[in-house]
Picture 1 (cartoon, rainbow, N blue to C red):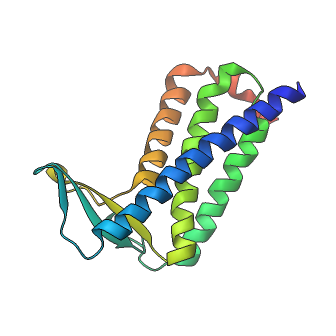
Picture 2 (cartoon, helix red, strand yellow):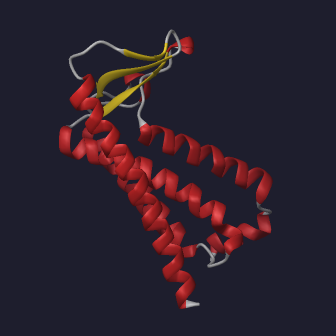
Length: 166
């Protein structure tokens, strides 16, 4: 039983470390290669690398509300860790572990930016829908949240999620 706990937390930490590493590396590359430059088209009129500094959230809302973002992020990170402790040591719950890891890594990646720079480095722009510029951490949070929704609606029965109430 103890071996499964170590495996669960080890897997979670490796996943988070790898994702945060990719996030921070990609933001560093954006800072070095894109800052003060023009947008770089990956797929013309569709996908661009375009440097942006965001002191708020998506669509530029809540600009400069650093304390708010620190508190919300810490609550999310602590909440995920709490749920990770409650998660049964069973491979059946691997998808939930991955969802938590994705969301945790994305939240942590942007939190690191906010603490170090007072803004988040964004650099991916999807032009056809004029979507806000985003980054790898945002992708992690979005994919993790989407997969969590799918899991809660289609994969796990309500009775399989009772462990969170204990």
